[in-house]
Image (cartoon, rainbow, N blue to C red; front, side, top):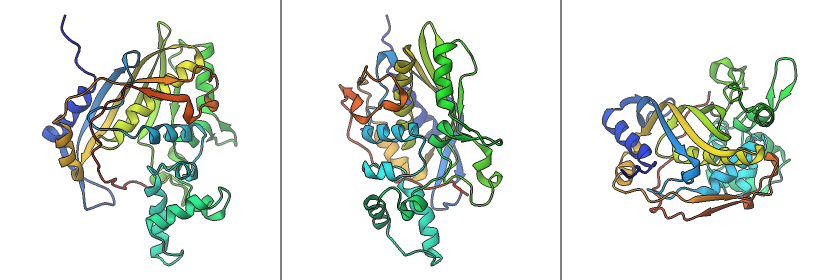
Length: 319
């Protein structure tokens, strides 16, 4: 019987595909770099066989878990992440402050000074509330979607209830793409800091196994996608535990998937590495409510990655 190919090769093969066949495109609001991209690709990971945390470079799992917990809180302010020393969203908050600083409307602060101030001040301080808020980002749309008639919808709570009561339905979908807060469609001053890259996910059950499919309209394959894979795989496992189902697949479907030009050398270095076995993720079985998860409820076992490969975040998007 032929040995099954390691699932991480899906990721490595797509890196090669983009380098070889991708189209070079400019980056909005950032003329210093460009992307090389393809359109329409898909990964599939069987979560019953291991946790898809990439092994060809070490991935920052602590940041992934805290970011996911932040989403689940329905929050839009980076204060929680900053307090946990997770800085993956700092650039977008500081970008807005820096623009106003250049206009002389606020005191000039370096990125480091800005984040240190954000950390030292209490969560209800006017500086934190104003400059730490990213608008109607993922967690807000998942948990506090505002309707035209004044209601607030918790999409995730609805999805969990559907899985518990009518798991066979084909309509268990959660969307983060809300045109009211995106680009020119938004009212002045209401646009999100970064329109959702992972825009919509659907939950599906077959033979008592839960699978989740995510659609990403835009995907930074080198830096962002390893986070997205691990985050939504973990999210799928958490949901399965909450609703009493076994774990199935995490399926990631891409729109525009790309590599930034300032990551080409790092990608070539990663492609020299051979995948190692995926680790196992253990979740505290006592947690039965999606809002009760804490960082300490997750234990990773058997992770043996290659060293990390650093790459600069390219801050794009917004309006």
